[in-house]
Amino acid sequence: MKIKPLDDRVLVEAAPQEEKTASGIIIPDTAKEKKHLGTIVEVGTDEELQKIVKPGNKVLYGKYAGEEIKIDNKEFVLLQRSDILAIVED
Image (cartoon, rainbow, N blue to C red):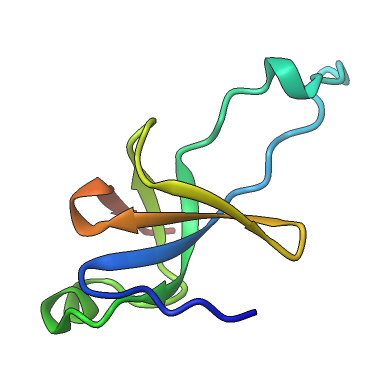
């Protein structure tokens, strides 16, 4: 299934959650804190937004931002432009 966001929205693949700590302690699903980092997969139809962010950019977004969706066992977040806090550069 392919999703193409409309207007000022972007589809972001959520970063995978850590299963263990550095010392080897396994973290149960109920104790995991959701990461607010992801990689842009698709950009909406807004031309100004397309100039700012591109597929492949890593972005930070707000804790309660967007709509979480699951496609083919992958977690995605559908964000509005105002939900993106920063572009992460390596």
